[in-house]
Image (cartoon, rainbow, N blue to C red; front, side):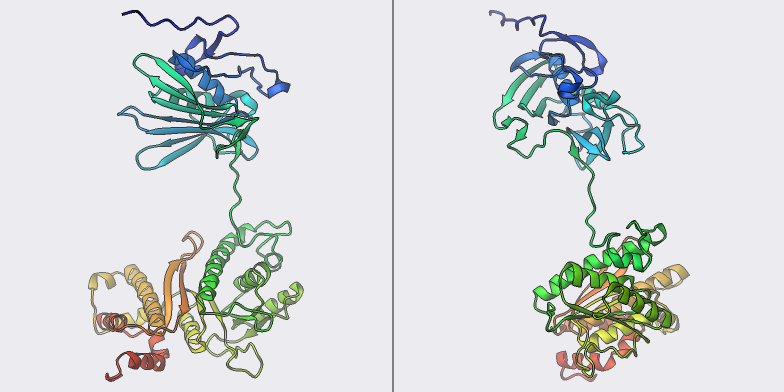
Length: 504
């Protein structure tokens, strides 16, 4: 058989010396180099501009071209390596240029069978227009540079390479055994003058992402309540409180849509504003935040009442509302959660709250907030409990000890008491016509009291099985919670509707 013709020898103008995988120096026939000045293309280290040529070539030459393409960040789109060897740790590797805090780096994403691992690698010496970076301003890999990262990947035996650049896309099929590579143009991706007709972005992509916030330091109330500094930055000492309010408001935002979308709550209008009460408002971080969300950001006419037992809180919060010009829609009163005379319309006791908020009301004060929610028939309640002492005492005095290993140890008994208390609260709300979710509203690093009860009133009666679950819980632990005693009449009436022939 006649031997296959050898590929044409490179001309002197076409041959260049470059470093390939493992740092080996060789003469490449695939790279057609032209000198590029700093002013012309911002390639600071004199890196040759890489041009792929269709056909079969030495693997080292194609690797050299790919390396040069990756180091030219302004024309790079993405490089993808697949077809890993059987014993390879990663089945797929991707490279792209990114800009993080003003500095350009090569981002490598490696995929194993379960997840992706991402690292950023500095362009050494500021090559290809990248800013040299010592890792202080952006998180960079300390083990390898951009050049070393791509050289390592190209030398790892991947059989299929795809290089997407401003001039077009190229596919490379590698024969590792013969150390040859076949280059072909991918005609499915046409890029003209650097404008991609696909989703691939050419050049460094900004990797600085602003977190989605409902509140930021520019919101005026944050400065007035002492959470934000004069320049709009969140004070270090108030970051946990800011995070709690921010996450609480995200849940309020979704819950408002849920309740109004299903027709369980009015949307609020000029003629009939939305009515919201914050029971145990304290310094009113949440109160002002909720008003800002609904009235200012969502344009929902809203009236708000904040209740707190401290006179200082009423005076301070009222002064802030006046300074913000919100005192016509917000008022604060001094009183307990159970007895405060909350009226949105003077002389009209039926003008009850549409939304009840209670953030960290201590012990049975949380139950008092739930009692008022039920008796107002409020369509929406968001309640984050605080300490749980009452049921702890009832458990200790109970005649039944269902599972001694749980209550034998103080810390386990305390934590179990917390869980059982909130379980009773959520279940009682279900019995009285609410759809209930219990969730974590903020990470435990911001507050250990991060449980939230989200209740929307549907008016649907609870089924017999729900009542049976409630009765079994009481009988198992030998306790009746404070909330059940407080809402005894409402529970008896609701039970009679489901079990009409039973003795209540």
